Image (tube, rainbow, N blue to C red; front, side):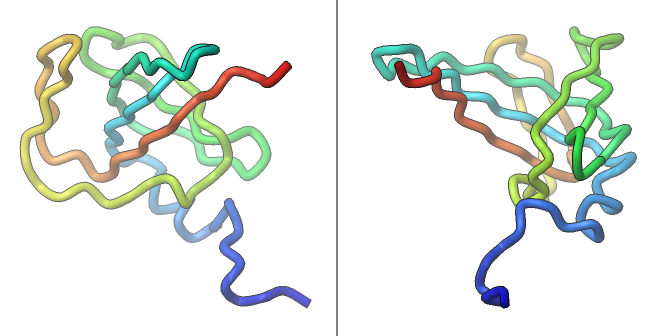
Length: 109
């Protein structure tokens, strides 16, 4: 029996809304001392698969690359309309459909 408050990491309806949408991604990489390094990218979601994850065809300076995010639709939030400037490249993304932020920590020893 499942508790209706338990949010599954995968929602098939949300996944179907993601495909062909533009997403702005923010990654925070924590090193062994917990110091953060930041990375931003954006692109169009081409695949949303419950086992493999979410595939993004990157745009801008990374056009031609693909990036995979884990299969967790909870981490995609509707983006308020506006212009978003990537700090590392200065690129401007206008009115993306979603934002997605992730924190990556190193494995513990």
